[in-house]
Image (cartoon, rainbow, N blue to C red; front, side):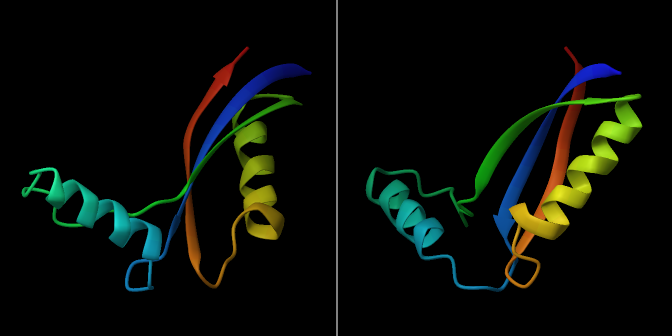
Length: 85
């Protein structure tokens, strides 16, 4: 078994109310960043785990997201990267 670090981004699904994202977008507009059209506030997780290879590590983390880490009704997740450690 090898050690891997898997990065995951979890964000609210498009079209759903994102009050934190709206607050950040409004604050950025107040600061003069008028080019910002939308902000989605989510979570970034880094999971370290052992697996036979990178594909197995990614598969395991996808299952973790689907079963526990992300709410399948309101959130989308994306595996941002898998790196051997």
